[in-house]
Image (tube, rainbow, N blue to C red):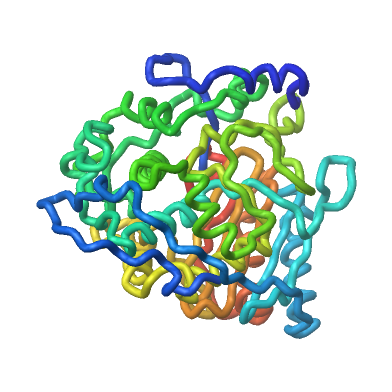
Length: 447
């Protein structure tokens, strides 16, 4: 059910939709650099509730030339690798996913990487080096970029949204940057709009190729009332990170994609990672993503990622994601103060989501300790990246979820993969973890 390439290119020549457009579409989103290399702050005075960040739009940025090591190592026992391979196949063999990719990095080196299933139905095996859409894992890249700006004193976490983007959403005078990053703002989630239904036939045939600006997505969110007053509760909203993308663009004068690329992707030599604008293609080798429909499998590999924007448009590989989270948690992308803020979970909500969510980072408790990372989903693809707080051990996986008739079993298989890879095959007897599973992504909501 993919579109004709000629018609697709014709669609892509259409201008980006603006605020006056009333017909909307999209899809559900499920979201080595030394600190010394970060640009030094400029001295300036503070204003009440606003940090005067708009006065530093032309601030210089330091060059970043350090890199992350990406060599494959033979470390780890053969039994551990075999157990991880079996856990990976536990997602594809029962048909929960058409492909599954996984990788484990220790002390900067890949010690395990594999793929099971097929790159396309009836086609070749999946490629362990393949690229995939990372959905909301994009949020961790975007949060890291924003926190670098905080470290450079371009803004503060307690700055009011109104000072940065006046009148952009209801309650903007009461919403802080921190509340956007930890989902306590109450801003409506734009993906609740009925048009953001990947199982709708119009979306499958046409709407998934429709381009959006970040402001378009905010305008869609503004059709719905706030979920709660700022700071009074916790609710995951993709709109929060669309607003973070707009803030990055306002402060730097560059697109959020350019800033993430300049500050993270290039310095870490993440050659399989990109933050696309509206190109529907996944560059390089990749597995196809499918949705199960009454008419059979619908190939949704091609879509316009601007529907996700700075909340979930990214593309990456398992090797790159492990390198990224290792550099982040190892203290190579943020100063200690900003990294500590990123790992501070919300104290507002009594719900598990709020208790386990920091600033663009999710905390996951496993049998071998507390890990940090993020889960993500976009039609056809589910992703997870986790790492130890000391930056020494990282895991990443991508599955092209397809036939999850038994969500409990599918989530258990996903949980087993993460725990087996991170903690070893004996960990399953030590107790359950809280690894976000793939099945909720099919409910067309964020993870």
